[in-house]
Image 1 (cartoon, rainbow, N blue to C red):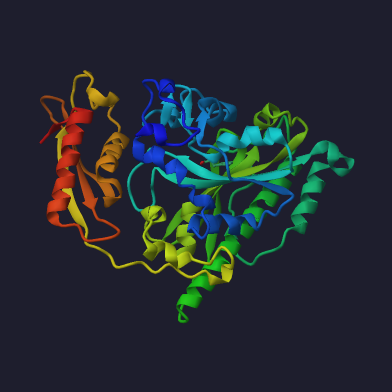
Image 2 (cartoon, rainbow, N blue to C red):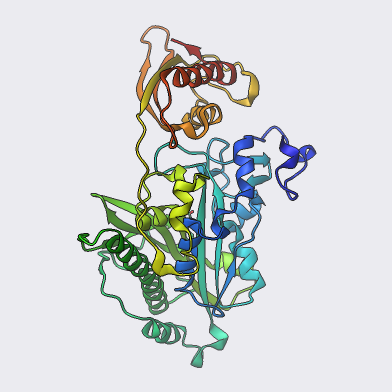
Length: 444
Ligand code: PHE
């Protein structure tokens, strides 16, 4: 089935023992939701793009997802032992080739093209991950960056040039919490060999204001949509906050969180680009900022879409709700969920093997190597989008034998119809058999 994935997909003789891409994931690369007219991911992309206008920003929407580990990790300063590189977290074609885990994989390359002082890259990204209503192994990110060239700013005064651009940005009336100083000497340091404190203060302010303008725009649109759908809608004041973060390719770094339905939700990561990345793109005289945001998260907030699987639905009850919005954003309405079908919970309990003998299929489930994402993937492979949620409900080590036992609760629920108990049982039996066959576990 894999030969027809995509014309640019690597041929089978490039696969090696690292290969771990199931057909369902490989097939997602042709979907291109971020450029599909009237799809909510694409609508979200264009609303954000409108806050970073051309020609100052150049847009990239066509980058292919198969990239070298060099691009995805090394070019960004990820250490050799970074957990993100592991097979349990990342989809590999072979030892040196992955499905990109983030749009930052294209940073260096696009900086190098250096066609503009800013860019936006929107694309599908791939991560092996837990299953729940806000995580899916394929999602979309938008990367943005803006730089200033020391040789081109008046008197070489970078800080003054950035502050001038900052003043030119529109103001907003959102309440923003930003309790920490711009840098922290250990946790969030200044790149002292490359930047002065004044320069970083200016770039940080410019970065934060630029992103706050996006958030303000999104929530203005969301509020208009909600009010159009429900004239009695009362909005709550929007709360956002900046917190310290760490990324190998920015310093200092921050995350933006939005208060939503009682919780702080992370919506993006950002920071001042590491000079190594810019040097790698022959931009020795430049400095600037970069961010990466998850488009599903933002679309879910804006449209009140309750489940991330919906973005992949071909159901007209979903897609028709966004018709005509690309041409006229005033047509944006709050998403109206279709009727909920009942949940169907099934448990599976099993013993991990204590020896390190290997099972078929390349996965192994002895206690040391076991990774939950392997269970997630097997469940996803068998159940597809009929599985809403998988949770560990028990973990126990036998006091005498030292063997470890785990129990998972799987919720089978279709977005489109009521599953009969017989159907759910059949899915569940297939999951049980696949766990035995692919992980070599012993069912309890
Ligand atoms: N690539 C990072 C992520 O996926 C986000 C990021 C992008 C952070 C650019 C800083 C700068 O988590």
